Amino acid sequence: MPQTILVTGASAGFGQAICQSLVEKGYRVIGVARRFEKLQSLKGVLGEQFFPLQMDVSKSEQVDQALASLPVEWQQIDALVNNAGLALGLDPAYQADFADWQTMIETNIIGLTYLTRIVLPDMVKRNQGHVVNIGSTAGTIPYPGGNVYGATKAYVKQFSQNLRADLAGTRLRVTNIEPGLCGGTEFSNVRFKGDDERAAKLYDGAGSIQPEDIASTVLWALEQPAHVNISRIEIVPVSQTFGPQPIDRTLWEE
Image 1 (spheres, rainbow, N blue to C red):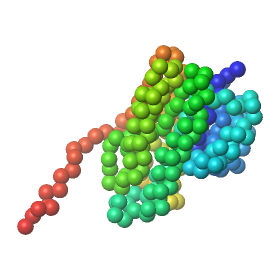
Image 2: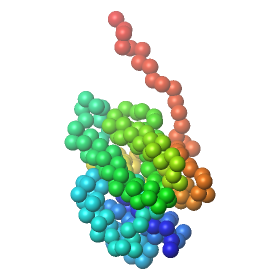
Image 3: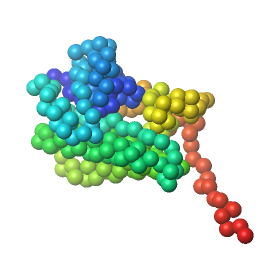
Image 4: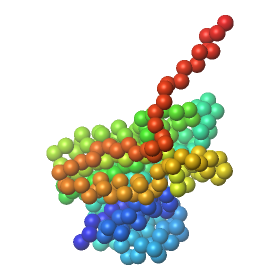
C-alpha cells in the first residue's frame, strides 16, 4: 500500500502544491485545512488518493475529533508535513496588535506542536516515520516587523532539532524546510489583511521562489534513502541575499 502523508494548510499555497506533488508520485495524502470547500475542490482534481480533512490545527479538540474521524484505512500516518502557519502584520512590537501575536503563536507553535505530539507515538511504535516542518528564514534572520512571526519560526527550527535528539535510536526522520521570499501564495495577502496591492509589490521583479519549489523540496527530502536525514534546508530566490547590519549614527548626536 502507498505511504500515507498528512499535510496541513492544504487548501492553498505551499500545502496545495505539496499535496499535488505527492499524489502525482503515488502517495496517499490527507489534506488538512479549515476551508473544507477548497479541500473538496482539490479532491476533484486529485481523486481518490486524496482525503480532505477539515480542522483548525490551533484548536486541539478539533485535531482530536478530526483524526478520530479518519476511516481505518487512512489512520496510519507515515509522514507528517506541518505546513499550516501564518504571519499577521508588519508593525513594530510597540505598535503590533497582540491578538495577531496570539493567533500566530496558537497556529505556528501550539498547532504544529500538538499535532506532532498526537501523530508521533504511532510512528515510534512502528519505528518508521518522517516529520517535515515548514519553517522560515525569518526564524534565523531578524527583520523589522518580524517580531513574533520570526520567533515562532525560530521555535519551529529548535523544536525540529530537539525532536531529532529525542528520536535518537529510532528510524524516524525530522526535516525543517525554511523558505525565504516566496510568491504565488496567500501569505502576504493574509499578513497585510487583504491589501492585495501591497502584497503584490513585495514580490514585484524579485523572481521569488514558488510553491512548486517548496513542494519539490518536500518530496526530495521524503524520498531520500531511509538512512539519510535532511535536517534543515534554507531556500531563497537568487535575488534575496544578505546585507550589512544597519548602524544608526544619529542616536548619540548632541
